[in-house]
Structure formats: C-alpha cells, structure tokens
Image (cartoon, rainbow, N blue to C red; front, side):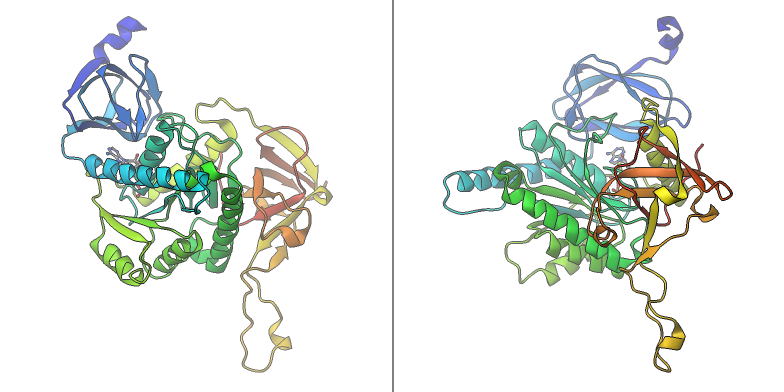
Length: 429
Ligand code: ADP
C-alpha cells in the first residue's frame, strides 16, 4: 500500500494564522496527518503524526496558529490555503466566554450570587458557518476542562442527531474532526419535519420543553451551569424564521447573540434587544472558507445522517431488522387535521387545525420508508412533552398478516410502544 499511495502523498506548509481548506472527493476518502507544528480542525487539535481518514464529501479546514506542515494522501475535490480568516475574532469571543465561565463558577462557589455562565446563540443565514463556529467554541471550551452544553435547534441538518429533531448534549471533550459529536444519550425531541413551517407551534413547544429540562439540569449542577451553552440555529432568518430566533433567545435566557455575516439581522436584533442590557449582540465575520451547499447537497446530507444513525459513520454499527404486530405499536402524529367537522361548527366558521393535537395513525402502506421516533412517554398524553429514546425505519408493511418490519439500532423490544411519525422519510441506499 505504501508504494501505491506514494504518488498521491504530498506536503503542505502552512504559515501562522492560515488554514488549508479541503473538500474531500466525492467517491474517495482522504488521509491526512500533522507532520510538524500545531494545527486544529474546527477547534480540535490534531495529534502529531497520526493519520486520520476523512470520508468522502467532507468539507473542513486545518488551521494553524503558529505554523504547521500537513501531509495529505489521496485526491480532493478542492484544496487551497488561505491566510485571511476570522479566527482571531472567533477566539477572542471564546476568551470572553471563558472569563464569564470563571466568574460564574467563582460566584457560585462562594455562595454570594448565582451568576449564569454564558448562554450563547449563533445565528445567521444558511451557509454562514453557524455549525462550525458553534463547534469551535465548544471544542475550545472543552479543551479548557469545561463541559458546555451544545443545543442544536437546526431541524434541517442535525449535528447531534437526525434531522427533524432538536437536541442537546454536554460536550466533554474537543469534538473529534472525523467522528463528530458522540451519539451517546443526547436529549432529543422529535419534531418530525425538516422545516419549521410544517408546525410552528409544535416547534416552539419542543424548544420550551428542551429549555425547561436543561434549566432543571443546570439548577442541580454548578459546573454545567457555569460552562453554559452554545446554541446552533436554523438558517431561516426571515418572517417566521426570525420570530423563532427571538423565541429561542427569550426561552433559553440567552445572554450572548453571535450574528454571522449579516448586517441587517444584527441591527434588527440589536434593536429589539436594546431593552435587555445583559444581552450582548456581537457581529462576526463569515469565514471565506464556508462552503455553500445547494438543496440537493442538503438532501443528500440529511439522508447520509439518517444512514449514519443506523449504520454508523464508517459502517461500524449493525442495525437489526425486527418484526412486530400492528397491535404492539401505537403510532401518533402531532397536529393537523381539523378538530371538529365543519358540520359541527357555527355557520361561516373554519375548522382550525390544532397544531398540538395527538392524532392516532392507522398502520398502513403510508408508513413505508418513514423514520419514526420512539417516545419515552408512558401515556399518550405525555407524548407531546416527552423526549425520545431513538428512531426506527419502516421497511415493510404486511397488511394481510398485520406485521410491520422495521430497522432499529438494536435487536429486542423497543423502549416504548408509543411512536411518533412526521414527514421524515429515507430511502435506504
Ligand atoms: P451553517 O451552519 O451556517 O449552515 P456550516 O458551519 O455547516 O454552515 O458550514 C457549511 C459548510 O462549510 C460545512 O460543510 C463546513 O464544514 C464547511 N466549512 C466551514 N468553515 C470552513 C472553512 N473555514 N474551510 C472549509 N470548509 C468550511
């Protein structure tokens, strides 16, 4: 192998405060290692000399503060070095957040007051680098021993779990540049759609549920309260999208708003938040390295994310195909459907679709290829406010025998018989 790869191995020397921007090829992975100096990928330091393998299509940058030599093995879609980056301004934000964490911790241990750690929300249009900045801030904090909470409100992509969900997880170590965020026991609420307009009310309810749960955790854990949280948001910043940003800022008691690359959004937020002196609105430059992803790419990324849930990033998981009887499972949809038939309403009144109504769903062919969430609810009434244990994927419906075949991460019974269905589909490839 050493001789056959020799032709593609090459070295790149990076000057201080510059980065190597890479898009891995479409069909082949790329190996990379740090030969000398120090370098990081989105806030996580590279180990010296160890080869790392990056999967096809990944887009990332290797940044160095003091200079480094990188060795690459394999072909890329593109790779180039850039010496103009917003990294200094990003790390300055980190330093300020770090100061606040220390103050929060000191104030809680001397019992004098309960200063909050930083509650940061990252906002901006799609492809402004929100997920990437969130990741850097979390990894830099974790490197310093904090365990900040990462909250992902972006139902379009999903950095913590599947698209269609909002989720939170503590970040205990700098995020692995290849593996991403470990999928161990995140807190997940299933919204079931990849755009908030499907059911805005439901989205808000789930955001509120998640925030209340985190609030309870923070109340009992000084460390995590001091470490605070970093919230990633959707790229939808107009109309209802903007309204939902304000809702999140309010619900999570945000004290730092980071606005990426949008003057207008920044001044709008400064304006509405001017009566809240403890909320800082900070404008940050978008990195020139952020890659725009078209609709098709996003769809592909969503599909890969679902695949990854069941099969692992490098096919290291083996999901199980299980069979259940229709009577073993209770499937619900949240919202939609008129509450009352038109005939039961006063003349001229329109039947309102109740966005929070729990609608029992008949098991039939319509469920084929849908991804369903397994609720932690013990009673149907709890479904709306419960987080979910995981997901299943429906692969076959046998109406005659009343059997349902589904893929699940593990064999055996599901943690609950209550399933939630939305519009999240997947075609296994
Ligand atoms: P957003 O969350 O605002 O939609 P992302 O942070 O996901 O944007 O960035 C979009 C894409 O650009 C991602 O694939 C990310 O890995 C990539 N990216 C971000 N910053 C850089 C950079 N400096 N160099 C190369 N790729 C980058």
